[in-house]
Length: 506
Image 1 (tube, rainbow, N blue to C red):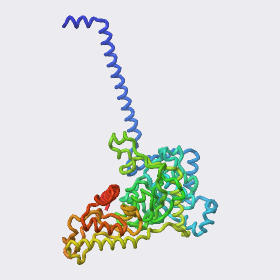
Image 2 (image 1 turned 135 degrees about the horizontal axis):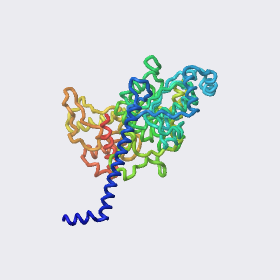
Image 3 (image 1 turned 90 degrees about the vertical axis):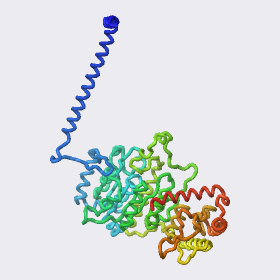
Image 4 (image 1 turned 180 degrees about the horizontal axis):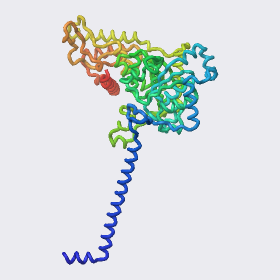
């Protein structure tokens, strides 16, 4: 073995290999050493750039979603507009110039209407396509105190629908972009910008008076949020605190501007976002009284649809992590750039009419209160009849269903139609299957006697269909599967599954 080592050691080839290995190790060591030195220098430079908290320095606050507020890069024109706006907001601006710029609005609303509008305070939450166009229209029309709230930044893909953003604004907060661009148009408008997401527990601050306790309360709030959870909490907050609000429903996948209306949320149709919002609000005891902008355009063959995520994304798992924030949509919503603008201007028009007192009309409530009362009475009669037929004492018998529950089931779960025929008139609610407890009342509470009926037991039919169903299924004990077509049974099961899924929001 030793002689072999001696021969290899004296070999010229072996000596070259050893030299190469040692050289490589040396180079690697030098590279790592240089990198370590550079890292240390960079760390030292970074530490040196951080001022002492006691020294004067510029710093931006971190909003509640955890990113820094990006300061825009101002060119010379932007700097001049910003300087003019600062002077104008301090009162150093010719009133005659403002009156001239608003002369067409004044001739329409009359001087007193414009004066009221100019003294108004409006809050816009959400500055996407709808919110940015609405904000621009309000500022150009004379509203002089505007608070804008949005957590997001301008993206390249949002330029097809944003009212004022340019390529130079990509990557900057939407609130900064909107204020900067509109200050160049209406420099006298006063702004408050909140680069953060709406949260109900911050509502007292986000919807506070203008500039502190002594300021003016919001005259109107515009909801231009596209996240269902945030939208519902905002509408509930405004409803419970008596703050006027108008909400934008879905502009995505819509293409007909003549089908956009303003009406009470209880009457909005053909809009999945509106339906989901109505359902959640009904769970919270709010069934009407909130105006919304919505489209009655129907989906159809060849029309845009919500795009699915690529299959490879599902295989990766963690689809929710693709959203900007938790619970925000991750799929791509096709948007024709004109439609958010239509929604934004429709909403701005409504707010202007409301604030100035100009006569206007919008869609009213559903006017179906009498229907709900009739359906509730009919359900009570059927439940009493079934309990009596099974030997129960029905004196003082009640059902745990309210008129609001009836409206929720008919409008939100069964879409205002019979599950059997699809007819929308002479509706009734009735059990889908016979009771497991023989229709016996619950008497656990002294002095009370009520049905064990649950909302997920009920289906919507016409009165004629319900009468036949009561006899054959509830009285005679036939199974629905033996009477109705498979597609009807499947539809009913889907609707009842929906109700059970929604029950968690009660």
